[in-house]
Image 1 (cartoon, rainbow, N blue to C red):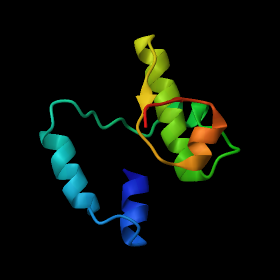
Image 2 (cartoon, rainbow, N blue to C red; image 1 turned 45 degrees about the vertical axis):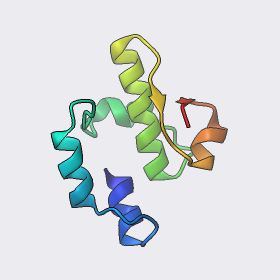
Image 3 (cartoon, helix red, strand yellow; image 1 turned 120 degrees about the vertical axis):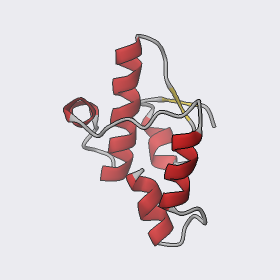
Image 4 (cartoon, rainbow, N blue to C red; image 1 turned 120 degrees about the horizontal axis):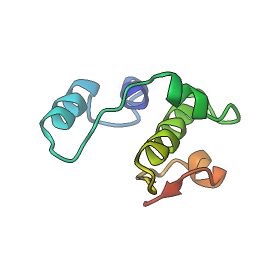
Length: 88
């Protein structure tokens, strides 16, 4: 969610943070995961902070559920890191 807020503020995406929150809260297949100590633990320091938060969340969720978690992203740094499975 921080990444969405950041990108919208810099006019890199057209959907606002509030719109994304509304869509996420009304969707049955979206879960907003908290930024907590577990995410911070798995966040790789070699990535930019927003990317590290995203990657740390994916790794944490994968371990919590004991199964692969895929990330939908076009972010080149995350994709090239090889740290998480990318769907798109």
